[in-house]
Each structure stands twice: as C-alpha cells, then as structure tokens.
Length: 241
Image (cartoon, rainbow, N blue to C red; front, side, top):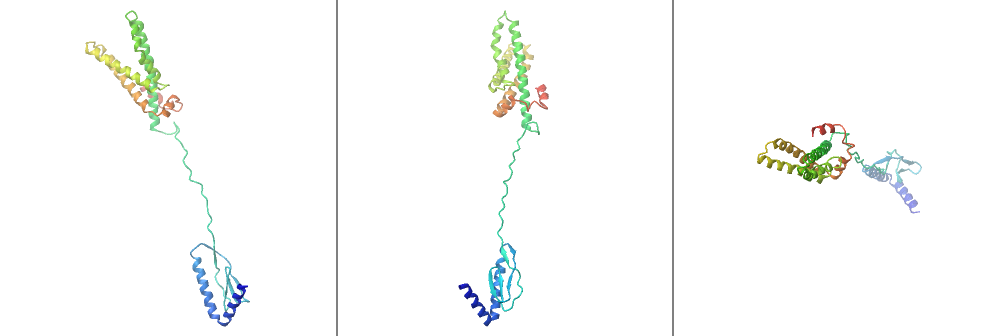
C-alpha cells in the first residue's frame, strides 16, 4: 500500500542519513508538544519499536537512529458538558400573622374602624327609633327619613365593607354637623355639645371611608374574611376607635 511504501522510503533515507531523520523526529515531537499545551490533555503511553528503530507518538510513526525514551505524549480530552438545575425562584409568599408588616397593621386598623362604625350605626339607629317613639304625636314619624344614614353605616361597616355605603354614612354625619351649625347660629346653644360629638364622629366615619377606598379588591376580601386579621392587636384597635 501507499503507507507501506512511505515507511520503507523513510527507513531507506534514515539508513542513508540517520542524523537528518533524528532532527526530523525531534521537530515533529516539538510541534506535537506545543499543540498539546493549548488544550486539556490526558497522558498516554509511547510505543517503542526497537526492531525497526521507530518511535510511536500517538498514532504517528517516526524513525530514529537510536531508540530513546520520549516523554509520554498527551491526547486531547473533550470537556464534559454539565447541566445545572435552574436557579430556584423564591416561592415564599407573605402569610398574614407570620411576620411584622405595615400593610397588615394598617388593615387591622381598617378592620377595627369597620367594627366601630358598625356599632356606631346600631347606636345611631337605636336613638333614632327612640326619638321617633318619643315625638310620635308631634310628627316624629318624619325622623325616619334620617334612617338612611344608619342603614348605610350598617352595610358599609364590618363585616360587609361596602365602600359607597360607608361613603353615604359619612355624608349623613356631614349633614348633621351642618344642621347643628345652623341651630347654633340661630341661638340654640345647647346644641354645642351635640355639634362637638358629631364632628368627632364625622372625622372617624370619614377616616374609615377614605381608608376603605384605598383598599384593593383582594384586601377588601381579606377584611370580609378576617381569619388572619382577628389576631393580636385588633382588639386594642377596636377599643380605641
């Protein structure tokens, strides 16, 4: 074959010029070592053929005058591909009651205000019915026209938390304050205490309404199902408001 003829030709040339063949083998070996430094290698053995005075480096055959020990030639090793799992994304969500949270504290205040507005609406309706019965003969039945305020307060407060019902409850107190200002201006000075009380109640009904309108739909649902809110701190807020 062509390979066998080439090897025989190399052996004849080496027989005629052994030094030249040694130089050729040394240069080939240096080129192989230089190429091996560029990549990662694993060492392999060197096959020596003393009979034919040749040296095997890798799968290449080089003739030499005298067989000498040659450092083991390296063979390239393919880098293994490693697959890494994707970075774990945080699936932790805030659970009400597990850690301090300003939004949770604020929702507790809104819920406590809603409970206070509910009792305020009940008390307001009680006094309204008492006045109707007390002034029945003097046209006290007309006082029932004011019942829309307490009714809106009852449906706008806890546990229903209807935003516009709470707004009308605050509006009803605004009209009461306006009428008491008129009574005070025309000389009914005894209405001063009622005016101060209604102004305080107007402040809290307005505060509850404004906070309720700031709640998102999901937060309103939390207020309507307050299993996570009726915990530590809510009772204190309720008594305060």
